[in-house]
Image (cartoon, rainbow, N blue to C red):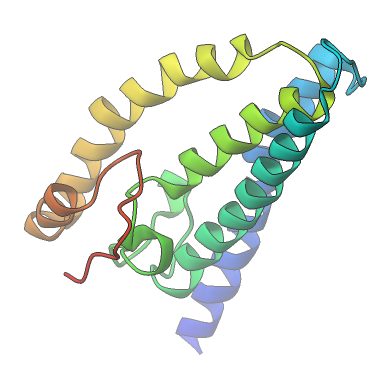
Length: 169
């Protein structure tokens, strides 16, 4: 029963964080910046729109899968105050250490392509905060929490550019 309660709490916590965190970054802020108005910056922009739509759909799918992996495999949430009990290294985490961030940036780059806006400065500015945060705050916390297991995982799986073949640690 304790495992079921823990999983239920992790599911609810992850869902709340999903809408509060990625929802704010990928929906609320871009909407405040642009009103989600469509533009045609150059003639024949449709290939960029198709690419943008694909990036948004792929990024959203990866986000959902990565969040659910935290609940199923880690028995926790991506939120540090309710961190997982187990190091999450399955699924997409076998290809890249930070699939949630990679997915967020796919969505954030896809939005201006889809809408025809040239507001790519937002994801670039966000990247300037996220990358150092991950390197200097998240990774040391994971080393303290999971020790040698995380250090081995970090040495084998890239942080940002997914490896083609999954890691089998």
